[in-house]
Structure formats: C-alpha cells, structure tokens
Length: 277
Image (cartoon, rainbow, N blue to C red; front, side, top):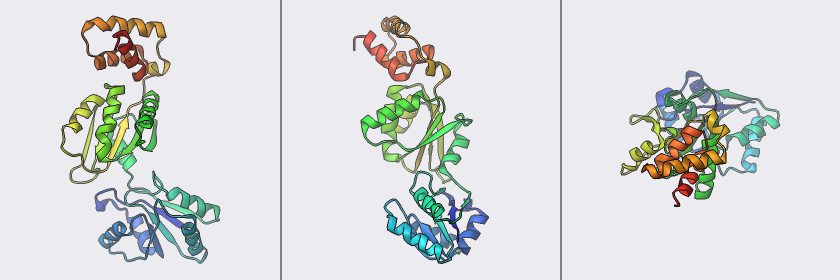
C-alpha cells in the first residue's frame, strides 16, 4: 500500500486542500511530527484517525514498523506540524525507506512556507536555493552567510525568531546594502513580509522588544560583477581614495562592493586596511 505525503496549513487552517482532507480521512493511520498538533487539525476537519509519532528522533526501528504496516496492506499518510513534509524535516528518510521497500509514495501538494514566502517576497525567483536553518555557531554562520552573499541566486532559509536579530547583525556587517526579505507569521493574523537593505531590516527588528512567530529569510543573489570581482590593485586604490572622505566604514564598504563588484567581506577588509583599523 502507498504512503501519502500530505501538506498541511502553515497557519490558517482554511488552507488545507480538499484532496488532502479526503486522503487524511481515508488512510488507515497518520504519521505526525507532533500528534497533539495534528489532532487539532483533524478535529477542525472532523476526521478521526489513529496517530503515530514520526519526528526528528525516530529510529530505524520506527521506520521498520511503518514498513511492516504497509506490507500488511495499510495505507498511511505522513504530515509535519506545518507545511510540506520532508522540506527541512526528517520525512525524506521515511520516503526513501518506503521507496526502497517497493511501495509507492504519493505527494499531496499544498502549503509550504518556502514557496508562500518566495511568491510575496519581491526577491528574484527565477533561480533560488533553499538551505534549511541557519547555523547556530558564530563561525559557521559567518562562513555560511559569506557563501550565500557570493551566490548568484536568491538564498532562502528558516530562522527562529530568537535568532533573527543575530542573523541580520552578521549579515549587515558583511554587506549592509544587500537586499533582504523577511517573512514572519505567514498566513496568520499578524503576517509580516518586509524587504529592504540588510542594515535597515536590522534596525527594524532590533527595535522590537521581542520577535514572534516562525521566520523565513531571503537574501538576494550577487550581481554578475560581484561574482567576477575586481583586481587587488584596483580594490586597494578605491579603498585608499575613500579613506579621507569621511564616509563611515560600513557605507564605504558598501560603495566599494557595489562599484567594483567584489564580495562584501573583501570590500570591508580593504576599507579597514586602508584606514589602518
């Protein structure tokens, strides 16, 4: 029997699809990231089904039991707490195991925080990459952000509300003028989607006592000139010329990066060296 991978609402329960509702009502059991959370959705739909826990810490033994139920002729649905399963969650491991065992996997499309954010972010969407959650360790975060800033495509990531200001602080330090979008509480009453230079978004969210809700962040891609970069001598000469103008370090590095098409960190380091900082 098949496994159905069912997308569920990321906020507003009305976003559940008719096909998703029918599948949840017809399967023998539902595998849920948090059974209590899924129970509230089922109560809203008027559906009663056995709920089985499947989450980050589920073991190979749990997956084996799922395969056993499919072998016995049961149909199962996999859901996450919100959105499309297997997008930045462990559902893909179960999907692989089910496929490898010879069972069909049927996707039931619906809400996803990734696409919901992108379509209203105002950032380029012809090419983009999704990188999951941002690293928590400072060194790893710096390295990851530098790579994302140098990438030609839009980068989209998830972040916790408690770490959003930290992320924007590092990002604004590397490239204060880079266009960034932040989506918060998507599809809910207090939905917020804003776009602007990294330093302005940092000021916006840093001024709040607390940031609430699930957060999605988009970082615009590097321009072709940034990918090519300027020569060392040209970079040094421009940085030296800007040194006596009185322009702040962050603003000077932004001008340098935009004019010469170099990476944000490279421009920042050149400005610091020219000023003897």
